[in-house]
Image (cartoon, rainbow, N blue to C red; front, side, top):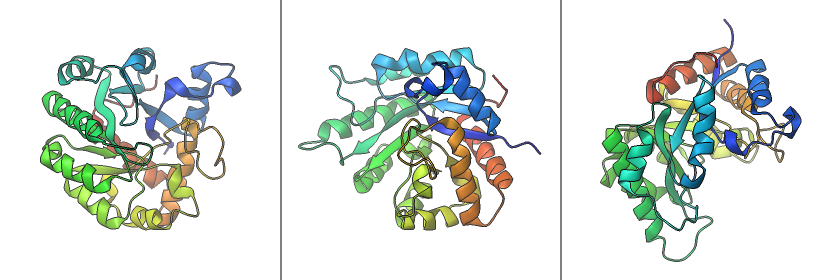
Length: 264
């Protein structure tokens, strides 16, 4: 069986392409050489939405999302109608990334919570899953997801870093748990425990490239090819094979986001 992995969260428009002669195709080929066959290119601001959508238009094995990251400063807040309109594109499979991040923001953060609610409403209207960013804001994130009926569409807790109790509450709200390179860090003791026990049909793998490169590339620019290292570490923690993790997480990805895994 040939290995087929999905990088469920990457920023292809922000990759360091210097090692590939400035060509995205080089990074995609490098990923393919490591068994990575599908990519979800995630949007963080509407000004660059077309840069996120363009690779999805050019490659059958790339999908896109639409949303505004909780930390993004913008002159004009996204509204439900705008998100719904952009999400109507057939290559847009999710709303986000959205959520709450109290680590980088200070002061009255009601604007962040309002922006989050807007995204949930758009997801419910389009019936497309949510990509959730949650940092130092677990309680408010889970509360708002519940209050706004986000379980109706579900989605993924991207780059999950919390403990087993928070993971269970997210799972109960119809969200999958996605593991990034952070799970390979020696310091991620609680996260490794989560990785051991998350139900097999509720987990995903991602790079969040160009950020958060896994061991042994920690501190360097991340690439979609490195999702293989995340999956291999997950296999080690769960005492199973890399092929099993690849097969299960790929199945989970397409169950959540739809589409197919045709080569691009």
